[in-house]
Amino acid sequence: MKRTLENRPTTAGLVLFLAAFSAALLTPACSSDRSEHDELDGPTPTLSLFAVGDTGSPWGIAPQLFSGQLAVGRAMQREHARAPIDAFILLGDNFYPKGLLVDELLTRVVKNIARPYCAFIDPSPQLATLLGNDCSYVGQRPPDIFAVAGNHDFDSPGSQRLQLNEIPRLVRNWDMPVENAPAIRDLAGGLSLIFLNSGYPWGDPETRALRDALRRARGPWRIVVGHRPPIAGHPQLSRMVTRASDQSDRVVHAYLAGHVHVLGALRGVLPAPALTVIAGSGSHARRQDATEYRIEEADLIVEELGFVRVDLMPPTKAAPERLRITLLETQKSAVLALLGNTTRARYEISLEGDVDRVD
Image (cartoon, rainbow, N blue to C red; front, top):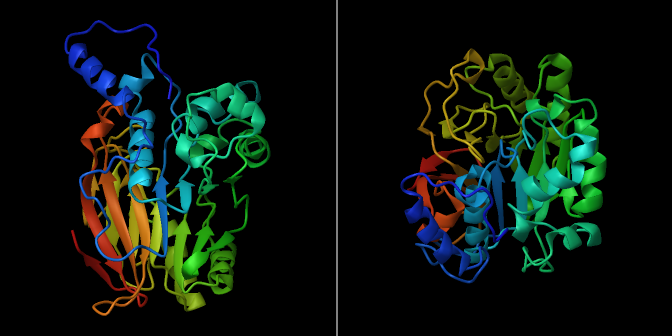
């Protein structure tokens, strides 16, 4: 992370931030320090991943103090140091406000991908040179990075193409699986990620494409990943996902999404996704008012910065294999990451699609 402050504000209360800033800089984000809970409850997961969306805000004044993305990124890196992950998912709107522009490629990749998520990237030599010593832990084996495009990522011609083709030249473990049709990534332990272009249209052809992808996924655990969530504000998308699950005769154990700038969770009734999880507060948190963001009958909605952790838990004498999903609220500033994260909800999902809240 960058160690200097430019255009330092002089507003009241900044002294407290600067004190915390000094303390935070003494401890790297990926140190071996433990957070509030030294270990995950239960046995070591078979597979773990993080998911977060709506991250790519341009930097403003003193980003170490005021950037929501850096705050969440720092929190994720500390959680990764505590309990490492195998995959990292960006849920879209990776670059605000108009997607990725060719003349900003290097700058935005450094600021919105590499610096916030140092522990998760495999940089090219060119990118490593640009980072210098700011990512001292570069060189460790990083998790896979999967990214979907959000609505803002389509706002400039060529933005999606840059993310598909040019970012992998800089971030060598970057994978944007879906361009049009749903794409599958089968991970270790029997967890399949089905990546969905969640933008309109949501008709019969799109339903069949998702149905076929669900059938092809090796599973037996299946998570659909898309920028837009199947919520009341997107009734056609909700119907499409439900119909595809029904027609494929495959359980969708979870649907991971961003778009709504909150941490949220909604239980479903099969064949709908067993649990829809929203992690759209990766750089800013607020409940939007437009109809398309309407959420009904939510189990949880938190207007705070945060991210989601997913763990595939092995069977024990007391419990069968299950999918554990934890929604974690972070501090509002990167310099306060030492204060740890707050678990806002934790769910366990059975292979049959039954959901229990266990926090």
